[in-house]
Image 1: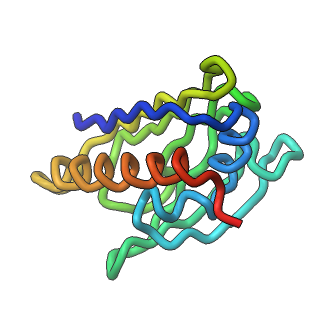
Image 2 (image 1 turned 135 degrees about the vertical axis):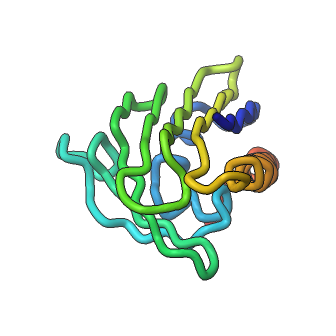
Length: 143
């Protein structure tokens, strides 16, 4: 089993950080992937539980991630629900207030379907997510 774990503090309030990271298309720089929204949440919200997206990384076949639990300004939990090179995948974003700012504690657990792929994906995701979150903390949401 592989684990990506990134914690990032933001000067922005938790509501702003959650609003930005809950928008599926805004996750492209974190994952180094092209993202296409497939569906809104089955709970009647745009990014709630049941919302799904297709991710495509380079020449690899696309795969689908689906939000399984969303608590506004607190939690986003999602899983790969179709395709991809990973198995037993779960991503969890936990948002909390930190004074006037906020903190994101982000973990992704998974295993590779092919031996050796898990460690490579773990290293790449950790770097991409850390860099993208740091830039967001420094500059805020792109206009």
